Length: 167
Image 1 (cartoon, rainbow, N blue to C red):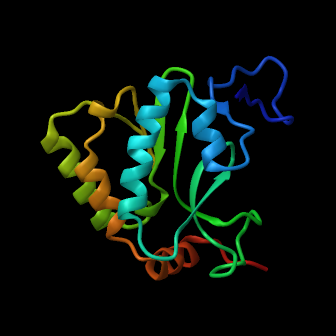
Image 2 (cartoon, rainbow, N blue to C red):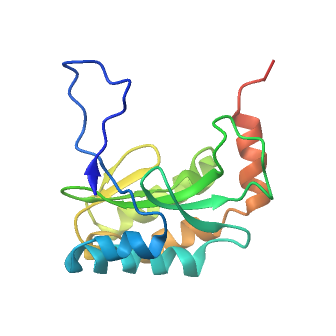
């Protein structure tokens, strides 16, 4: 694994310590991780694979495990990449779980956040990213429910509604 700084980064601008893998397959990604980190990623990966809706494919994209809507289902994306439903990565000092699937679904996100609060676990959460340090830190049942309630059809409709008008 290597630290990834985009080629467009301005000199003197401090970047976050994001780690990006050069693995081509999920199996290579898992094999590249130290045993303790592989166990955490494998646990969350299993949770995702067990709960993701039909039509989501696991790939490597953006240097991490990516759970995507394939081009065969939806080819017209703004960045010429498959629509990312969720993603998972081992960073230098923590793990990142990206739940793009709940972005734009206020009722799902509100329920997700309420269930998270009810667990009493303290998580570092951004708009779609949950940062955690151990598998025990992540409320697996809450995450499983969150990724299972959005269908591919609904995710695509939401993407199209949020996407700016094209010229």
